[in-house]
Image (tube, rainbow, N blue to C red):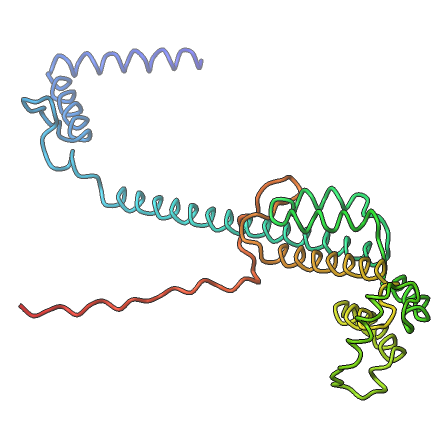
Amino acid sequence: MTLFIALVAFVLGAAIVAWAASRGYLSQILPEEEGTEASALGPVEEPTGDGEPSGAAAVTPPADQMAAIGTVEGRVAMLEDRISRLDFQSSAASGNAARAEGLLIAFAARRLIDRGEPLGYVTDQLRLRFMNAQPHAVETVIAFSKNPVTLGQLSARLEALSPDLAQADHNQSAWERARYEIASLFTVHRDSPALASPSARIARAKIMLIEQRIDNAISDVKRLPGAEAADKWIADARRYQEAQRALDLLETTAMLEPSRLQDAGGNKVNQPSPLAAPATVEMVAPEPEQAP
């Protein structure tokens, strides 16, 4: 029954189409549909003689497209600025970390020197980080570490030398003894006689050692009657003083050296120290314009 109904409907549709074609209705309907489709597609622009489409719409992009391009360029500029700032911050952090590591190495070397212990692995780190900036200071510290001496040892040796320092050496030649006696005839006492005695000078030299004022301690020892007995002590005290000055210089270099400090990889630290004073910029006022 369903097949019969479908067949009847098909036959009726074919009959209606044949009747519309015989009356001319079908030709009137088809051109209108083609015209509607053509109007929906929009007017077709004819190419000019140069092969380019005519009209200003083909040259000027829409306003929304220009806004989109401006937005993209702004975002790209913001990303580039952010990347440059991150790069600068990363470089600054790396430079500050290298300076902090160098300062820790200098502190470790000072601690070992004060204890009278060998530097060990610190030797290679000192050469790697500071050899390009302060070679003499590095060699001074390393040489002292091979034959170290501490403040405690210097104080103990000074105490042991006190009897010999308080009296003149009896093994001196006649000329040296006469020169010492002549020099002793004329003495300018800036202090009281009690402070100028050998025992007072030895006590003051010990105090200067405790305060790490090595120059004053050596000066007091050299003014004692038996100062020749302390030649080895004076040489060791001077070596200790030079090592301490070299360590001070290395610590200052780790904090303030602008270009010759190196990191753990042997690369130069180009980042300026945050402790360094900022460079002053001279502002030059423009010259006034002369009237014509």
